[in-house]
Amino acid sequence: MESRRDVFQAIADPTRRAILTLLAVQALTPGAIADNFKSSRQTISKHIQILTECELLKPEQTGREIYYHINAKKMNEVADFIEPFRRLWDERFNQLEAVMKKYKTKQ
Amino acid sequence: MEQKTKIHAEDGKQELAITREFDLPLELLFKAYVEPDIVEQWMGTKVLKLESKKHGSYQFETTDPRGNKHRFNGAIHEFAPNRKITRTFEMENTPFGVQLEVYEFEKVTDDTSRLKMHVIYESVAQRDQLLKLPFAQGINMAHDRLQQAASELK
Image (cartoon, rainbow over all chains, first blue to last red):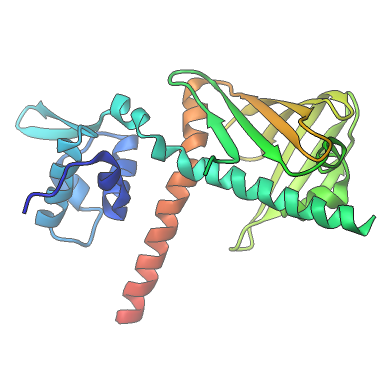
């Protein structure tokens, strides 16, 4: 069965997120991407395919090799990228609130 | 449910805004940024120095789970009690540069308040890098766990 190609579903997978992080630094060939993982090349190739279908990656032919690039525009549309940052601040502020509530009752 | 903490980061800009409403009176919210022992409690950091006044400076130190120490410092440019703090922020020994932070404190009701943080980075690239940092750390943590699980299988 063909699964839905949803961007959020695509980045929910840790391997696919790791691929995106790798490619954020530089464009790589599928072989070079797979070298970073213990999974088989076929498995990594499937992940690359899903990311490409979601337009998070763009393939570019350079000579005989295909290099995968991050599609920055699409990535920026993915608000989920900012979510861990937001959660970090949310937790920090929750802590502030908890500390000050305790402080208030001590007074 | 509406999110309490909101981040507004426009594409291609070197700034961002963070807003949060607190279930605290304005004075208590402001105090959380001024009293060193209180800052230590909620930030989970050691306050080495905190001079809450115009032209004052601060330095904090945190220890990560691996035992590494990280220091942060900055200078306070404006200090208006219960209203506003403008300061710089820098993570020592990192390539992230210096950021300018403008904190605005507002009373909403007698028991609630709002904080607006406006953060300006040296470049768009630096802002984006910092935004992605918790995301990247999440991935590293997932990798560490995978590696640990894999080594236990051996």
